[in-house]
Image (cartoon, rainbow, N blue to C red; front, side):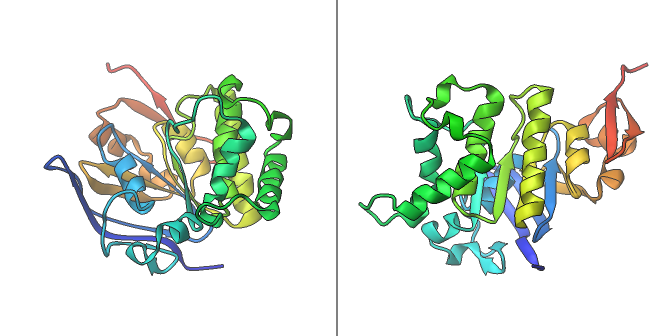
Length: 259
């Protein structure tokens, strides 16, 4: 499958009278992994919210060739799934019930989940090695296990576009790798498209096909990780002292002390 999964043209967002995004263009091809990076306050999460339909952006965001304003909420939920930085989890909810929430777009109003919905959830739980946790309360799981459950809910939606907002920010390095390897395997196996935000620049460069650097609400640079993760760009936009080391999969960003 080819074409654009996401097209954003001249996206402008103001919150509280303050410009957050000031004319952002972005294209993500079907099956591509694009990660948005940038300093705090650059507008990364706002961009993802607009793409996911959580912010009003009439006429400037299209998903798989359809303007997002033309998609009803239920239809949009079948196309795009979001994993937020800190998803709200109802107290006492089990893993199975939480992942089943991903089937909401397919359940009629006032209806109940069908056998097909339960089968879809069990398939995802099995794929993510979570079957043994289905009756466990989400609050009792480790960080890496919870992150897999958040992904499971998104995958249970049957969406082909995953929006991941800082998906590993609360995880240790082992769980970071576990979650990101899983996302990449699923992307390749099922033709998913991934649009993510990340603070860890080395991790971003290891997994993304392309990086988009946001600064002051605008795209400051975009391209393969080798073109975006440069000492000059990171010094200018992050005010950081770094050294770039070429790794097996992408540039590694090493912070160094100022002289």
